[in-house]
Image 1 (cartoon, one colour):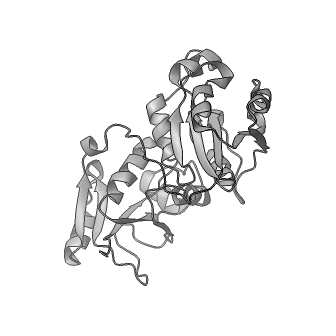
Image 2 (tube, rainbow, N blue to C red; image 1 turned 60 degrees about the vertical axis):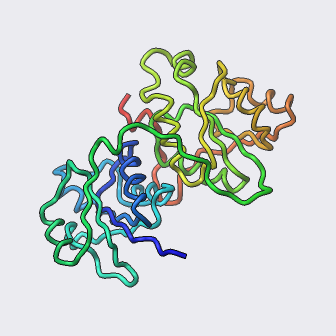
Length: 274
């Protein structure tokens, strides 16, 4: 059995969007990916502005990303252009975006025979559909639906809780239906991009795009999947979903919107600014 190379990336990863996830996905293709996460003080020093999200929240998000093997929280006193001295941490490749080419890191890597790789923007273009996550056979099927237009830690917590009930399938509302329900200007992100982001979370077995209309736009996908459970949060308990589940003999599960321990409750509206 071959041993995977240890790969490292380093950054603040503040308010993670699809471009961050594409970078992590491509970096992970070199081997087992470790993220060195900058603390709030370092992030502010490097960018000149306070982080949008605190380190604890950024850490929680990164630990939920399917492309990341582990996250190491750096101390504010550590140099972001060097590597911490930790047991069994000997990365062979350090990856940066080409636009963020770093002479200090290049010199550091050369001195230690570490391969310094730069990813061009062209390699991170597009939003490939994440394949289904592997899972144990015989588990129940759980479906959840929604827009997921500005993905945040509240969504991750919802998925984390639901995957305890079984294999989680999240069905993303298609663009035309989101506009129908929410009006012009919505969604902010395309259905392909939203599917990519949701499917990049390790608690999600598979992310799909709906093909129906209205509050029950996921009806064709639900009938195909034949889930045991249809889950919503308390804000999504509307649109005839409860009656729909009764008709089809699907268990209807309503969860409270509770953030992960120690984190602030988030909303897409607040984070995106409108």
